[in-house]
Image (cartoon, rainbow, N blue to C red; front, side, top):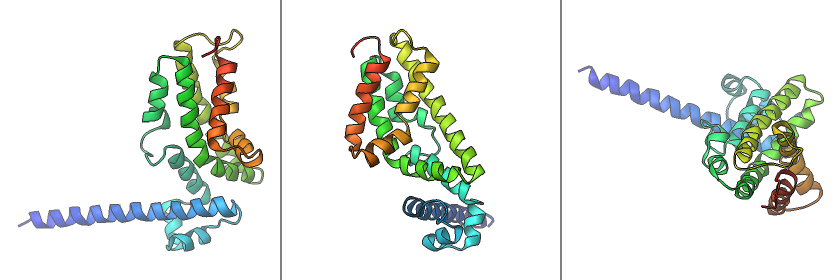
Length: 218
């Protein structure tokens, strides 16, 4: 006679878990839209709650503050809907790391990173702009950049395993080069200011990396 009660408890627990996931997703979707259109200062917790159709208290209970919301948004955007798997361990990144030809690695990398940047660059612009006035955002911005550098160093190491780089480039120098060129800031400059399309950025990035990194034409 105890089995139905156990199943009922499991059902209610599963339903609460799904409701929590749906609430979190609604808050993030609302915040994502507002951050991209209104920026940091005009995107308040109250505005996010109204857009998500939840109470202010619910937003605070789920995330605590705006910094936590945009941090989660950036992480989920970079990981493209697979937040439980670090970017460097996802399928496209693994293809880059497992390729045996440097030219192919760079071509795959340029396509993958362009896709990531096309989605995350606007959010990074929000963080970078707000970082001038918000110390916590400045810390978050620095942390994200350090994380980028760590991931890109893995890419550079995989290139070096497949062949030499230009004579003057060591691991750190090559990583710095990739970190600058394949950055959200560069993507925003090229696409928003110069007016190039993401495919054009991808082509430019691929050719630039091949010319600047490789010891031979690939």
